[in-house]
Length: 511
Image 1 (tube, one colour):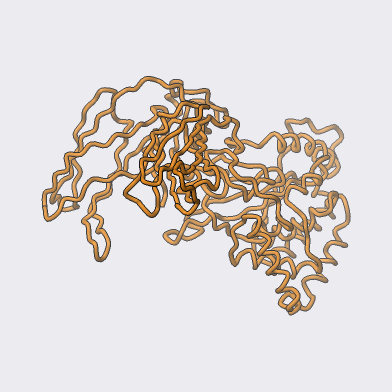
Image 2 (cartoon, rainbow, N blue to C red):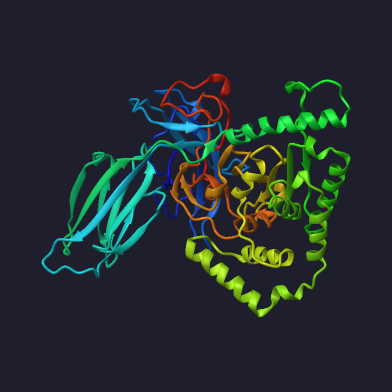
């Protein structure tokens, strides 16, 4: 459901026919697909809870004002049933703002500023305080009283509450519904504890402009590139096919080269294929070049030269030969190991996560270059400014935990000089923002472009971050569904859904 956290019943002990008689309320949006997941567990404090039932219920099958009782079997043998009563009630339209591409949904955000201070006679900063807003981007935060301001970002439509408690007195806590805080005004609250802690809260609405582009078509920069590239392709086709007249714009095909992975072998193979196309006069007929793993190494090297496809590739091929055949022991020399350590430490200082894949990328860079490279993916835009080269697209497979193999999951992430994103979800960000933190499609924390950013991300065939963290920042709101507008068009509030675009999508948080 459209909820930031899970709710559960109380535990009924020592009963084969438990009765809960508990009610739970969810506030859902009628224009989205809302699916409730019901799970029943047999509680076990020693070995963990044993799952008994897991079933999905589509709230879209309910009509406003309808009461419905559903019965779910607890076992395939039909022994025992779970009876649940559902009721859907209409609420007054609050004019919620959200944006969707028909697959992903981003809500308008509110930002809560909280400042704590002690009001007693003896002020000190020894008291540790924890603040929590369920479903917020920041999650739980804790610090000493009077050390600064806390910020929480959460969807404006969610009816959440701010919880404050002292860590040395967890039974004493203050809960403030966010709906009780007027937007833009400072509210002073007194924490009813022996330490006399006071808090000031101010809630303000966030801007609605998204940093994530929701859409399935090419971005504006790519469309402009294709327009420029068509002129080059038309001239190349006329010469290659020996045509007498000009090629009309609607007759110009969009040709793409798809190169596979395979390390050094894939890299050298792509060099040879591109050299062959260049010799035949067909390379200028190509608009896109895509690759994975070793093929991306070749593309990263070639696009350091802004006019590489207009030149003889004998020089780059000879340089590659020198690098590939050189002694490899130097990459593990003490001086190189020290450089790897320094670069990984710098990445951690900037806020980037560190893992073995980053070290492997540094080693690959040392194998293919004598000196460190500081090229970034966005730098390759200069090689596309006049349509002089095909548009490179670097591909990587996203992983999905241990339950599915990479190829079973089959989720591709695309990197281009303009954007990075997932075609499956229709979500893209500018390439210079890759690695930054997002929430509900908005930029929360921008991280600076690290040195050699291109190789850090593109010399790896597999991307190990989930899409919610990698691109979209939709961790707390996985609701998917159509809004009735064209893909990529911003929503203007709560309007009637388009019936011909209704799709069945799961709104549960993926594990």
